[in-house]
Length: 309
Ligand code: NDP
Image (cartoon, rainbow, N blue to C red; front, side, top):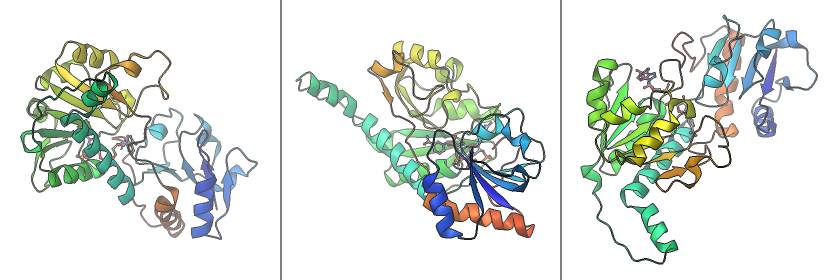
């Protein structure tokens, strides 16, 4: 049995090094180097070439290198019986928590405004709202979203969360299911999107949703670009309903030259760095699942293929 690493566009070296250090006996192939496809039962991947998995007759598990699995589930030629796993990692959660907290503090204390003022050599104080007066709505309060909530609560923000199933999280009011979405949105002064990308969530951040947010609301999208209808965001920021947005993920990465987001004064762009998987931190769970597969035990962090996350 062999493990195949497939990460075109991402250097696999750090992954192979960490795998070898933590499991010296492991037989590893790196795509597209020459390898025996029949031997491969486990693949570790990030954005594989579409359709290739059907060429591996004994493949049983595809492990994502990150928390998102949409790069796997969106492959229309994915064989049906293959199991998919995602990353659940303390470091990934912590980094997401601090990044979103940083964005929110920067927004709420008007730091972009002051940078502009500085560049224009202007001394322009503006009023600000205190943390405890701001309600942050976390759309998709799962592993990463709960860490974000924790960081925000530590900083006196009010936090509410939306998910498919009701949650019991201390000091976080939980909203669940489509019936409760409007009530959740109506209260969210800042909306943080942390949903997985599935057929149910694609393009969820649209005009209709933005109009349900309070006037002056701010959007943070750190989940996937495909959640957002870009033109709707631009329209709602430009008509003043939204005060702005911080975007870390995009339909096309990098965004194209001349994209209106680049120079928009109220839109902050970061290059998909909210939380970056660290191979050394994640490899132990990959190896554990590799061994679980060999021992016929249930996998950890397995994705429910019918719901897509
Ligand atoms: P989880 O699976 O732990 O959490 C997802 C949450 O979304 C759950 O609370 C789930 O509800 C909820 N959810 C899913 N579908 C729906 C729906 N249709 N309606 C309402 N709620 C829904 O995922 P993670 O927190 O680990 O990761 C979230 C996403 O973050 C990833 O899929 C990835 O796309 C993105 N990400 C971005 C990174 C970046 O650097 N920008 C880095 C890492 C991840 P329930 O709990 O009820 O099942």
